[in-house]
Length: 72
Image (cartoon, rainbow, N blue to C red; front, side):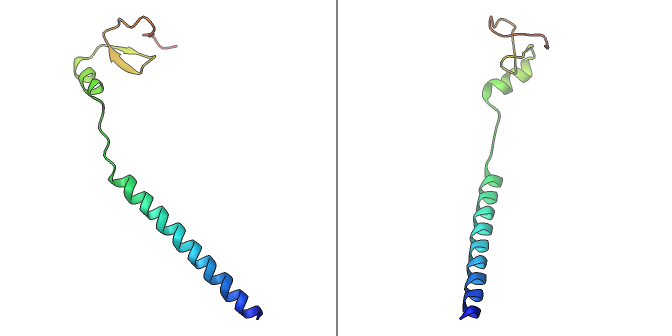
């Protein structure tokens, strides 16, 4: 009877390990296939240049009244 429970626990641990590996590999597969691209304003600003707005983290023409344009 004691031997039965040892085998049952081993089987349950193996099943849990299988499920965990399956889900981690599924998440890895989905994450690796995700495509990210920069927003249009990031692409346009990189070509035009401008002044670095440290509030937004983007380049602009320096006219943002709430932005700051010098490093702290």
